[in-house]
Length: 382
Image (cartoon, rainbow, N blue to C red; front, side, top):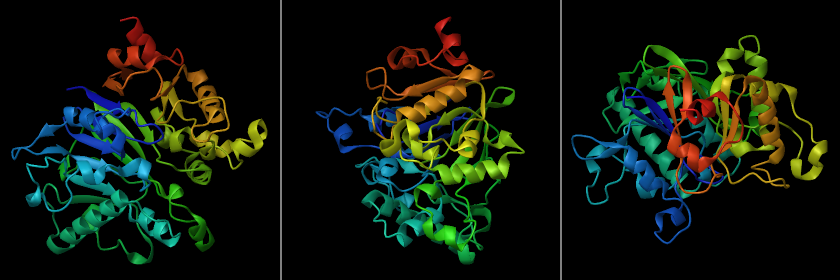
């Protein structure tokens, strides 16, 4: 099967399903609003859309092979308790028919910094943290895991807290191709963040947004092992992108992408230290942060998982950030897309072939075109 990625219409939030060529699935964040669950509500029923794309196992359970949470804000984790099974896989109930998470991908750094800053976790984020602790305890007890008990810990924590996690720990700059305990040649993932603090002073001020998981995800198609690269950065802001550029500017391919999910829903704060609402056009872009986010490959696409982007003072999404991304894409013939544009409830769906990601025709009609890049031209001309 061809690899695909589905980018759901969740307003200012993130929810992406990656279907690998092998058939395995990776879910990145969710925002399943109560209004979407209500048949009379106006929000798209993204839960039903997601379920329609998933398979059932031999026990009749819908499942995702992996679920990556970039960080525990409500707009990245809403709907977890209502739609996903938490607890031992044996306790799954046919009557509730919730989705089984075969493997969690989670960073403990995010939750520690959130607690330190007295950030109150929403109920879904607290439930995720509890389930992650259960799975880590299972691994420590048995030193292996079964489906529904797997977890990957993304990034080393301070004070040796992750030193004994061995096989389930992914360190910064490591690349892995194991999902749910099985090697899968149809993808690789390189962990770029959350970055450790530069010093104790920085550790005290880093926010949960700056602790977002950042991953370069590479998808295979046929005989092409690097058919598409995705850069995913949660809500990481300007300080982190500056540090990533300082770290990788001599090897910028680490940050290269065919599709970038614009950080923090196309926020200006990922590109600048200045406030857009206060300074407007006088706000200055950070050259280093922009360089980190400018490693677009030919025909690249930047996706804003946000509400419609208007020429106003809002941030996110921010019209100035959109203009910067459009400028980044122009030299490579790329495209900028917002998931909320074009009308209708259908998500954006990209199919990966040897030449990279292409927007599927049904989504092309409903989503509209925002530039004239390679991906849209190939479909528009058949």
